[in-house]
Length: 317
Length: 293
Image (cartoon, rainbow over the protein chains, first blue to last red):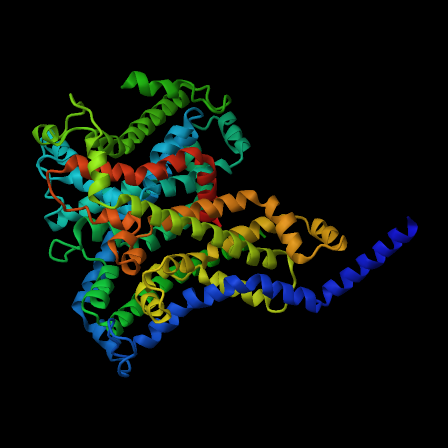
């Protein structure tokens, strides 16, 4: 008994010392466990970035194998001068401007409402989140049917209240309205769930104390819930901006970027130049410009957030 | 309407201490009414597709927004099933999503385990590199990715969809943060008993992190099932398409076959809705966890 205990201690001590010095076994084991992911990560996450960068410097054709000829930064110059590129970039930004405010604020409001109701929460979760698991093409099929001029449900709804329904799929402003409503319905639930989870983390006592002090529900929301949700709101905001800037599915399926390319987002522009006109090098340059814009947006958000956190900690200290 | 909506509102005072005032009661009732109204509106498109799919085309043309039919039937479903290869699309989506789920869970939990419990040279660098991967907007990189897969010769295969799906930094971090909560003493005890690292991972850690596995599995399934642009580019044969891409080709089709189009939509959303109904709690929990971290 004592001998086994003693050997166990010896082994334990040995294990601890070897642990500190990282034995070859653990070193090797760590890399073995990491290798499968690392290989895929390098090939399919880093790989496309590098390949895109290389191709953007050649006049590669998408249909032919091989790189084509070296053209230096000519593709970038052409992209930056192309009014079509900037127009489609503007469409992605416009879509972001249209969808971000309702998709950040409405779910917040409804999550706050839902937190005040103890019964049938599953029902609200179901109603708001179910659309999120539905594929984009199905969402578009259903909404295209509801947007049908004269006979569609939404068009009927407009005429039912005495308004003339906009031409949802035929005019530019109608198309933006159609895509915005569809997106609101489709992705509302995701942000709703993020807010709901964060609200559940706010300790109950905070509200109880406020209620004893006679705070009205509105005051509780304004001075407890909303301030405590600040970091969640900022997360939802950046996730929404990035998701909206990457819009493709809805606009492509519902409108094919039309009418007359007036809603074509930047991903569809890249798709068109790369896969319809086969200008691989040029489209790669457009990809890289767009890629850098997205990175700048998320890095900017990370910097602002870090600055704010540091300010908060110094205040607390 | 008010009778229905007031019902959840009446018993809604979640906190008895704050629910005493009449202002609070009125406020809660207002919140419940608003919420129920919007939730019902949110269900309309589903109900609409379902009702339309069960009505005959002649009735839809005569009266497009009626909620009732005198001739409920499943005819649209049989014709939707025979006119487009929905069965194949289902099968493709199912194979791709299932294989993606299995491989993602295995590969990402392995590196998550290594990052959480093993000490090896270069670990912090590796961690930083994967963290940086979270910021890469991969959806923007379809063109270079396409060129890469053409060079490897995997275009048109399931692998073209599965392999990029596995390289998900988010999944690594879900596993890492979950595995980190397993006490080091437990793992050291297993090691002292002579268990190899593989056994520690496979027999000790994996059974303990079932919630992380289900979160990653569900989210991977939904994302791969719903992916659109990449499968559109990669799978070019009609029969090899996924359900998401296949159904998009029905848009702008014949204007009179409303019932058939809606029947296809119902077939498109039904499996996912069923999965969602069964796993509601886990899905919501998974989104909340991965979204916030």
